[in-house]
Image 1 (cartoon, helix red, strand yellow):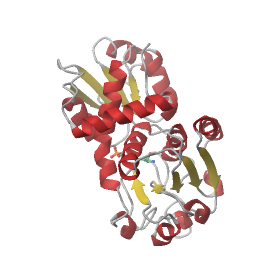
Image 2: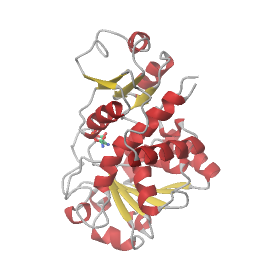
Image 3: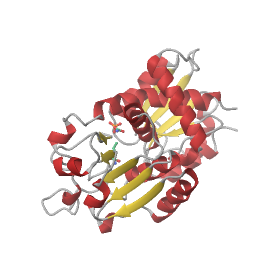
Image 4: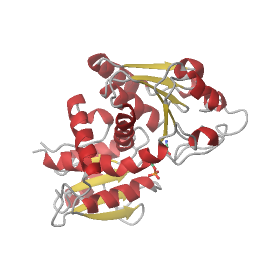
Length: 308
Ligand code: CP
Ligand code: NVA
């Protein structure tokens, strides 16, 4: 059966470990797997802007022996002249995989439903699962393990990154804390899924509106922009923004475990969700994280293409 990667829990905990292991191997031996040799094409659609996702998929597909076909919003019939289902029916006969950055998760689900080749979520309004593969790979590299670590997210609890931290962290057996203002709570259904998964893996997922509680003794501190693509900035970035107390700064680091590491999916807004001092400081592993998008997605593609 074709496997897709539309949300973080589309991989079982054991499969997640396999993908991360493959990714680590491909980081050491960059051209060590060529499942797309031929070359086969991978279609990569962008309905929203991107730097990292665009570069890392294009580079990774080429590393795996394939040919990336990058299609920007408005450049194909998808989304205005042709349905998602018909697009999938055309693509599956030609390409090895479909990667799509879009808004509605339901569009990705429809694409997957009609595609016999893997469909990969390159960010939606609800999840950013490829980013989490890179984050977990980075944390594994720096901490040696994932299960049992406390990973605390600060900021918009209702956005794609918060949801993916909850689900992927739970999948890896981590203790995820989401610190967010009361009016930016995670989606209740996704939170429940993450908590159920955590109960199976020995992790946990909690939500607090007290940032100090999330920072206390944490191993990993993470944050994201206060204004995600498609959201209005109104009321989110001014001095009265409810997010201000959730900025990662020196005090947040001081409350965390000594040696705690800091991640940010980027692009970052210094002085908003994170201070420049922390982002550019010695505990930041943000550039490793950005590099790991490449290796993590190669691991994912190699794994998906090997499933029968
Ligand atoms: N982190 C991330 O997905 O970056 P881009 O939006 O630049 O792809
Ligand atoms: N939450 C952000 C992530 C960007 C990579 C957004 O959706 O814009």
